[in-house]
Image (tube, rainbow, N blue to C red; front, top):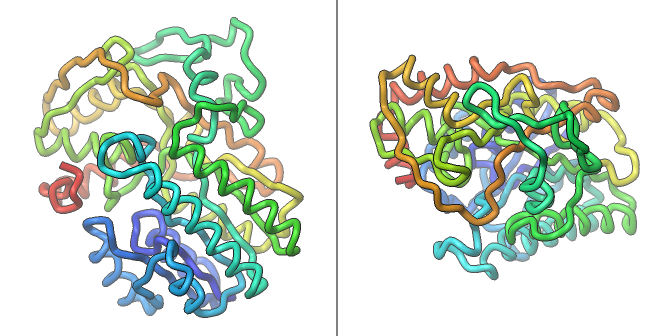
Length: 355
């Protein structure tokens, strides 16, 4: 089986490549990356040491995509992953659309011409910001919790946010590019008869991640705490009660491994998140870090940040029902892995351009 991975030198792309190489016999993996992100060069050397083919190129450039070797499947892990992309002053809306939508369109043309299947790594940020912001919440143990005694919208339950939750706008410019990519992927798959899987991933976390305050918050927070860098509880009263769930890239790779061996149903969208068992607030994460590294208090900042939501936990039960997949890595093991990496690489955030 020949696999092509875009964004292969990023955190997710590289970890998925290595995990698939370990789990599938006779697999041939090639990947493309523009090496734009600081730290990606380290992953390039790691991949090449394992015999994985690296192509320096950019999926936004059609001629670069046309030159790629043939593959049975494309795993699209190339994106600008920040929810603030296009409005943060560091990238324009046009640049965001070129990264996250135009690049996917080029890959869909590749799949059409090469008769390859597509696994699109999408995001939980396609879900409606306004609907998420108005979920009924209560407070429990220094964290927001879903108030299941109140009426919940379609797709929300004590298990988390499911695939049928609202995707009505606003979802952020970033979320809109990913949602548009999902739609185009299914249209191409239907029109040109190739298989498409869409995985809406939650917060992916693990050692070696290029985490920032806007993307990869678990890794960023642990590294910043260990390095005694400034931390802020931003918005929602400045208490750090906002909640996210964490998913390890090895669990993403296992889901992909299963999908490579199954034909998708029509328009198959699956949530891939850590779920309730792997959910934690920033305040609880700080307490975990205090135990590991010693006290380091964040400052309170009550200003709101665009597109932020107080509670997001992924319900991935559909993936379990249809494919038998569920996360195996616990939150404690993920945090311990990141903390060990932080001790070994105390300058990681500076090396990867996060600070």
